[in-house]
Length: 361
Image 1 (cartoon, rainbow, N blue to C red):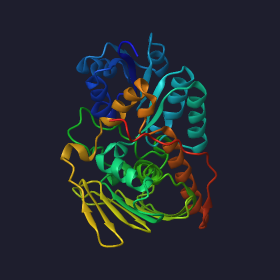
Image 2 (tube, helix red, strand yellow):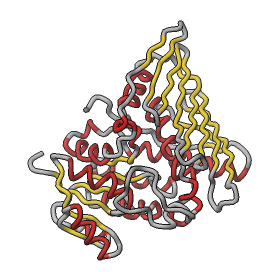
Image 3 (spheres, helix red, strand yellow):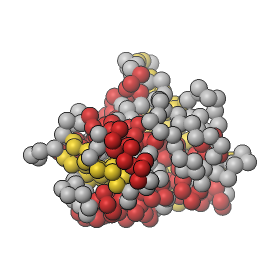
Image 4 (cartoon, rainbow, N blue to C red):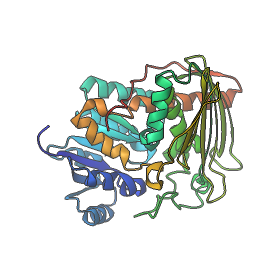
């Protein structure tokens, strides 16, 4: 592809200014030509501070930019669907933040639009880009664990105050700006609490690793006096016959983060400690293989999703986090809500998930 790829960012808020805008500015084949933020003065300040030519106040204004080819949708969750739909409808390659949408139906419509228009469509899940995640996926798909029988994940991250709306302190690095109040605590904006904010990572991660999809879900939530879920526990039966469990909360000590994933197969067990950059394999015959620990900057590669958007435009085989994984996550989240409401298993009917590439570097 000749020349740089002209791209824009819809929703130039906390996460976009921390991750997506710096990533696009750093990519040698990208040209960030426009950002969008509702307040004109704030939009102009972001554009000036990051050296972006255009400051827009609406998605429509940004999408009308001449020769725009790729877009990052990093607006609040309640706006993801309309912003991504408008971009995909115009034939633009799109990266969408998680949670992908507020409903599975919306996510499915976006995936269909992207497939119909033949454009790259990615969901922003940084865990899919770690060296350990890529290697774990390769090992599982190569059959080195045998047949997967059980998976478990514990994920904690001190975001409970964001979910309760009493604190807007972000959890990653020193921010250019802080999250807007209500983005995480208002159900009309956020969709839900811990399950939309954090379990959306896990609900995409299991299919990313194994290719298996939840077929039914049994879930329980605890709001702990909040308007949104703070503690979430889910059990699932997967399409490959394996069993999976997720436990997640944002109510954890300020400096405590857990993301422990265990995959048990007929030939061995794989353990990943994602927040600490650790991974090991133990075979049923006693072989133990510890992988090199990840450097601090490699543990949560927040720049990788927007970088991969550009890589995927150049070479479609390089899409490591297709939005179909976000669709799978939304179907899982909806089923969990149905289960928690009725006290029974909730069945899932879904479309097949596209296989992400692991060879492209």
